[in-house]
Length: 225
Figure 1 (cartoon, rainbow, N blue to C red):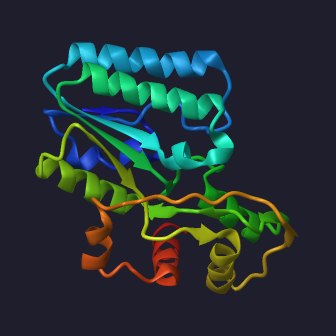
Figure 2: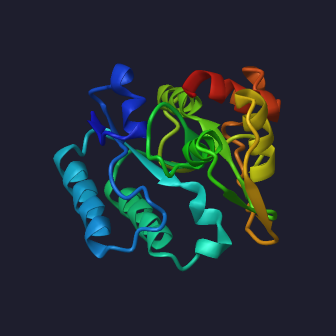
Figure 3: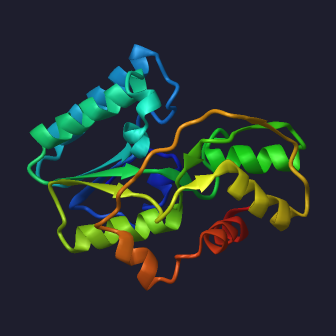
């Protein structure tokens, strides 16, 4: 059972299961402030759990929780509150905190979509020199999630992120090479970086030979752009 129609939800269309709820609907914009948007997700979570208490509830949360610059943001506080709801109401659940997903389609404001479009359309990109973000291939999100379900790794919170963070400059270097196009940039000495630990999923990347940062970005570009 799939709840949602965005990038994450669409990953599981061919792997839908009657005994699992893939809950990937709700607030996805980290800049959201409207209480109605948060309430909509909260009500949908409660309703889905009440109607399907026998199913494993997979909730896709966010690694933005670890970003100290967003500690007081309505979005992060909402996601933490939803995580608590899932923990309290679900007999069997899995909370997956996802970093910056890269896949086919999705919101144009997603990091990789924004950077690719800016390079191709020759729009100026402001680079916060101290900022780093974590990119993860949407296909890897799907593969890891299904593996966790098969292993019955329930009633826990797990980070779904790549082995290392990327600076915007690192990502743009690969984009420029791939598209053979120079990015228009201006640098600001600012930005945040935060550590994401992935002990439960680290082996996935090593076993699948996905340990080279540059090659990982190139792989995603070839698949989706």
